[in-house]
Length: 177
Image (tube, rainbow, N blue to C red; front, side, top):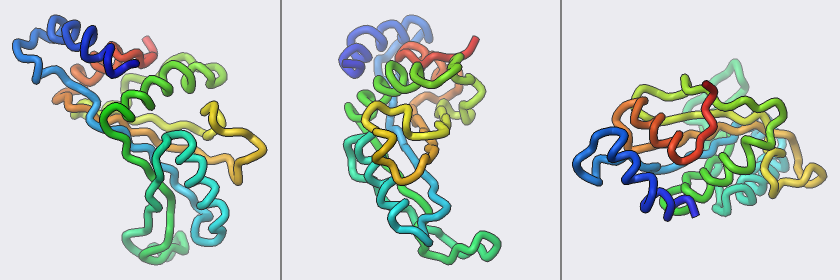
């Protein structure tokens, strides 16, 4: 399991690589947030239910339905309308999802050449987007209501992008060279 490997192999490696004196300085994955924005959530509750079910199958945790914080007349959204769903994974579940992401999901994408290292936010957190949920092995094509993309944000305890890069690289994230 990735969490055990992180504690036994990756932490000593990162301490040496980043010249840390204390084990508590070593960055770790704090949480992973998976978000699906659904345009038709207000008009068609079936699509929202389908995306909630898909996200629950992917993560093993019940998603929270996200609602609009304010009204936007150009988009036809009023305050309180459902606009998507999200899941926050922490601890061992976050590491298990990350392992599935880098070992199964990303290699299954057609013409995948690695993820861009430019997707860090300046504080060591990494974000990526997937165009559809079908790359996950739990999702069957004939069971989905709608092909839906998702945003995955990996929040780390790293202070800089360099530390976050070394952490994710050591955990197995396939970065483009």
